[in-house]
Length: 92
Image (tube, rainbow, N blue to C red):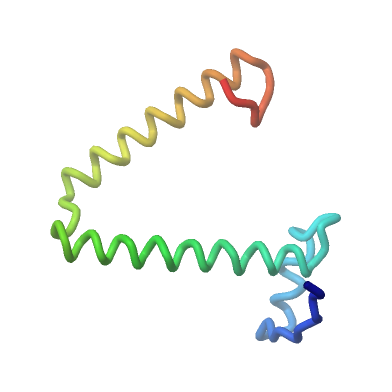
């Protein structure tokens, strides 16, 4: 399937200046495509959260705190494994 160029407004011209350093060698088009994919994924996750809250009720503060603690423990474990292996981004 052939891709056709699309025009996309970025709002204020300075916004392009803000993100250009982030685009690296991938280019602006790839950066914007990835940003759109991430936004779509976030919207889908928020839709799932809404559905789960409708089904099971909202997350309590205690549940939220417990989840954050577990995430911090996972992050610490991943950092420990990366430090042990001497490489970043490889599976342990």
